[in-house]
Length: 302
Length: 315
Picture 1 (cartoon, chains in turn cyan, orange):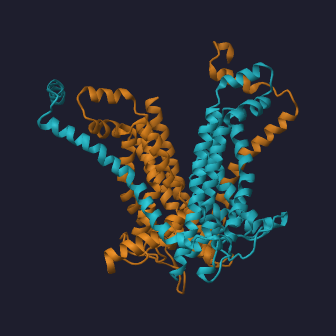
Picture 2 (picture 1 turned 90 degrees about the horizontal axis):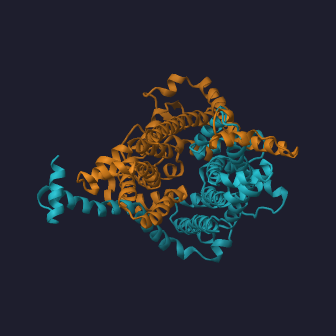
Picture 3 (picture 1 turned 30 degrees about the vertical axis):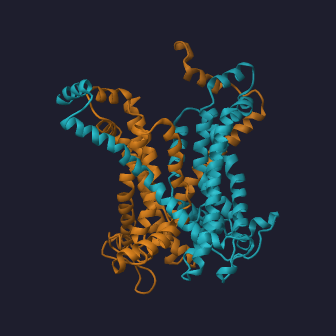
């Protein structure tokens, strides 16, 4: 092969000529071309973020955070949508995480290695790929209509809980499978039962991974819009959700829905409101992602 | 089983799995855990039941042939109404096509860079940053697509050639959204190509670029295919970006400059209106939803099969 010949020559003279020089130049150039391509998506996002900050920051004041939505752009705020988002997310986590971790523990620690386990695995992998709007239809048909919960906080939380369930099961399974078998064997050898082993040794060991997965799932649910619009949460809310059991059945709105509402309005004044809402939403989402990274690093080190 | 020879890891695990639970309460715990796992199976059945039971109601009124006849329009607002789903499917194909034109070269370039060029430190820093692109709420991309891309860039640039709502603005943002999926899954595939192949190529005098594109890239092609299928599944299921920026006019066109409507865009439109339960408008939501579900299901299963096959090839 001629390539081999020419390279030997290049190694001797250290200064490549002709086709070898051309190939090396291309190779050196490709590093920078590929780096630029890698960064291009991020650059677009940063430019859009800066542009958005210029439009949105003037509207971002205490009034914006503490006012209810309004027909008048300068008076409209995100109070009810922030409270709605927090409320729905709290219940989503309460509903989804125990079930997800329970399913993952069963799959990793108790399930017989047979066709049933394979089916459950494949099923969860497929559910993770189901579009969020389909979960919205499910929520509409089952929680809103069949169980007659209406477009309530509980219906929203149940819908989002089903939506984030597959991804939290997958991250929990991964976290549990990374706990070394020697820890289980040591515990079992000392006479602990299987559940004692799981509860006292496996779950604490898997905690960083489970926590990271949970935070990322919350970040995803916090930005979800389509599924909640499907269940009927695109409404005008000018009251705080009540902090009681009955509050679960109140209707609600969330921050992404409010941003959507302002985005599709034809009046240009609302553009600044949408931009300001996006700043709040992005701070929350990036904050959650950063928190997930910190939690993973810190707990792993301990 | 253990008698057949010295127990290896899996035999031991199997033996421990069969060890009796010595505290009676533990059986209840295991039952609870099984129920947790059963929730996921129940969810799948519920999705299928909900979609298809109402879709059947739809097909009692609108014939299958009418629905899938490419000659029929999708026109549900006034009489005579017509439910030819191809206009919506083609809207979905339109944004899929143009978002892939944007995301595929960039995503694959990123995968090659991260896997073959980047220093370990650089990769550890860049990968989470890139993955953040997939974590941005889609309503944020939707707003960017409509106000910045369409209003501030495309309209001044292209003038009367482009409509205010257009598939291109949505496709650009969809492309940015799926970049990390293509990059991440392809990078995993490239990273699992055995080192021997690279070393053999370097030994023959290949440059880094040649090793990346003539050795690693072809060896990882099945993983790359899986990445593309997963990215397509993400695009066709995405709702907010297309509903806000691509328009709401069903249109048999693959042009990026026209206003179109996708399947998900139509579904959101029905949800925002108040179609009464049992009407054809309401059941059409489930018919389109069922078709969308089938399409994403096929893509996801195909991706899984490809990933599994390529993993077996090297391990």
